[in-house]
Every structure is written in C-alpha cells, then in structure tokens.
Image (cartoon, rainbow, N blue to C red; front, side, top):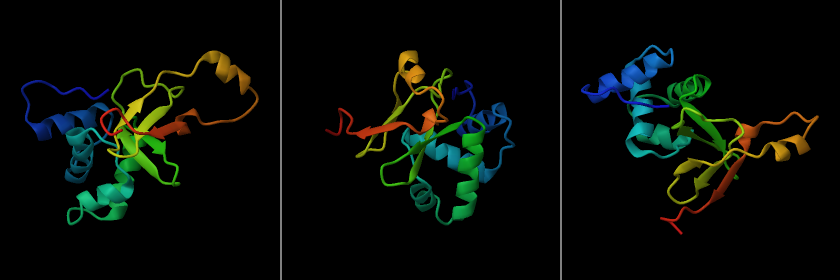
Length: 143
C-alpha cells in the first residue's frame, strides 16, 4: 500500500516508497512512480513513454514497470486489445483472487471484490493466473 510520510517533500516521499519496497531510488524510478501517484490512473508502456519522452527512453520505462510489478508496487492488467496497463496497488490486502475493473474512457482502475472460493474450487486441477482477470467498461463518471 502506498502511504506518504508526513512533513516531507514530494521527491523524498517517492524515494521512501521505493526504499520501503527494497528499490534503490534514482531519478528515472522516481519519475515513473510519480506518474501513477499524481493522476491515479493506469498507464500502458506507450502512454508512459509519451509522458516521459525526452527524459528517458522506452526501454528504461519498461524496465521500471517490470521492476515495480515484481516488487508489488504496480499491478499488471491485461486489456482486450492484447496490451497491458500498469496500475498502482492501493490496498495493503491486494489479493491475486481479486479481478480488476478498468474504465475504457478515463483508464481508472479499481480492484474488485475477491472471487468466491466456490468459484475457484470449480476450476480445480488447472493452472491459471487470477491476476490476469480484468473487466472493462465505463465508470459512473464516464458512462
């Protein structure tokens, strides 16, 4: 869960978030994570690269996205077009049994309630990735 220390400037807060997840802070990492914290939206590699164009190359953006996903700061969300969005994990209890909802208009991402155990029991003896379950539609603000 992303929590901001009190009475600290913005860059120091970003660095504390990174350190708390075992990541050594640097300018590029702070810039990438700042994009998610500032607008509370999911971003694709392409949109982040466009935002950060001139500050870092596409490969650096991608490496940071993967690092943040591996360290539990970001969640990777599949889209119906075959691409992936990355969103800030905002709850301490973020669970892999919880699908996501993504607004196709504003790109806001919400974690939905955990899938019931009865449902999961029905797909026994299969190897599956619950984190890849994502619903798409329009949020109440965009409908």
